[in-house]
Image (cartoon, rainbow, N blue to C red; front, side, top):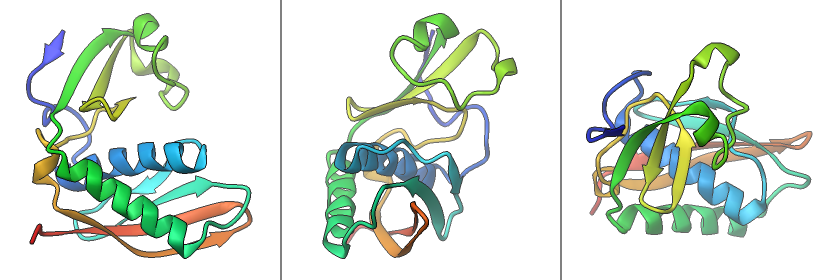
Length: 155
């Protein structure tokens, strides 16, 4: 079943920030080959995500990630949601973060063709609604990279 409004169900995250987190996750996967963040805190003013990497990225690499996230945002990609049977969804996305009692239907959220993942949160309908993504700070300890980020209005 196609859900026309991805702002529906679930967690009451700030939709622009939550959608930016999806784009950040996919960008980190593409740039560093790491897993998506399973530990995060999404808030309207500032958010954070943790990634596990074998070594600390350079400032240049993180600025590249920031630029790539903003490039995706600037493409004005549609954000859509689709509900699929769990056995169908697991053929195309990792469902390991879902609790066992999540049910037989999985809601997948698509950011254009850039990202797809299971999610019950709220999202914008188009990446043009997000604003400019900016890292506030980051630190690396014992294999864990923690990034803190915010959104600024487009100028």
